[in-house]
Image (tube, rainbow, N blue to C red; front, top):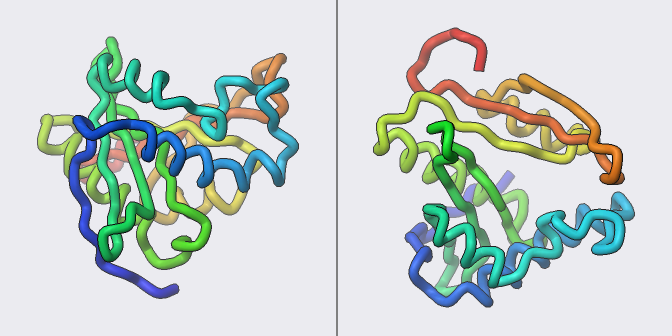
Amino acid sequence: MITTRAELREVTREPLDANAALIRRSYQTVADDMGITIENAPRYTAFITAGKLGEERDAGSVFYGLFLDGTQAGFVAVQRDEDGKWHMRRLAVLPEYRNRGLGRQLIERAIAHVKEQGATKLHIGIVAEQKGLKEWYEGMGFRTYRTFTVPHLPFGVALLAMRLDGSEEDA
């Protein structure tokens, strides 16, 4: 794996059209591989709009962009839910920039953000059938705590979490 250092910066207040397009393009590879369509999973991330990102921003999400030579190659969002749990969402790296360590850099920024807020755990949700992605997250310290199906979705959901305080307690 080639590791590339990139500029990471908050993009929360920037126009959201380019970020939504980046997320859609990044997630479209999974949608294509798994037969996920706007008809069978309209809320799947591959179909996100700038309006939906705006709603997430208004609900308190913080967005980070990853840039190489001024071109945005990645995105991640972090948000605290109403129960006080911190979630990482929308982790996206454009296909042509994958396998360079950029996703890890975005995750490290998300972790740093939630630690700065005093959090001790970070949650994520992924398509359960993406075994390689699950193993990648587990390699960084995330642990699966729930897997389930939703009758109207063409895929299962896996929920993972990472302890940020170094404790061995289950995520």
